Amino acid sequence: MDILYEIILTRKEEDIEGSYTRYLFEQGIDKICKKVGEESAEVIIASKNGSPREISCEIADLLYHLLVLMAERKIPAQEVYLELAKRLNKTLGL
Ligand SMILES: N=c1c2ncn([C@@H]3O[C@H](COP(=O)(O)OP(=O)(O)OP(=O)(O)O)[C@@H](O)[C@H]3O)c2ncn1[C@@H]1O[C@H](COP(=O)(O)O)[C@@H](O)[C@H]1O
Image (cartoon, rainbow, N blue to C red; front, side):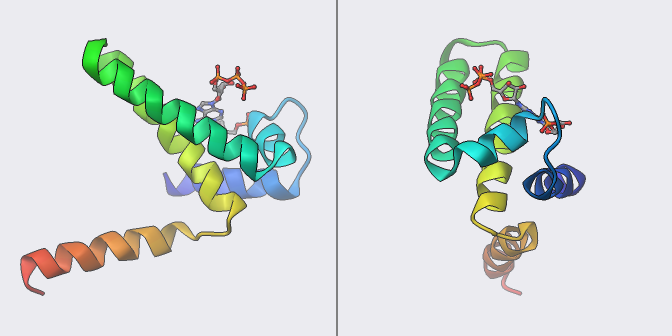
């Protein structure tokens, strides 16, 4: 995930031909949010009717689009990990 996030960040700076990530950044935040919404719905639908493989693929699509959203809004991946760690530590009493 960290390497993927780094690659996504480079797509913000470099115009790579045929890059879908670059296309999303060019379209902007509304398009990226729309994709997150669509991919979330696809995870829900696959979870109810799909095979484990189909569910995994839809989750991968959603995670990718969430990383693009994070990059667009300049949210470092570490900030999200830190928030999860804080919650976990609370549960563990640390
Ligand atoms: N993980 C992904 C990834 N997951 C999904 N997708 C793309 O997300 C799109 C989702 O498909 P949809 O049918 O929902 O969308 P669409 O009809 O193609 O396009 P829209 O107009 O609806 O946006 C597909 O085009 C997929 O290729 C991804 N595109 C890129 N990555 C990663 O990002 C890296 C950089 O990719 P590029 O920016 O394309 O070089 C790649 O090496 C991958 O590791």
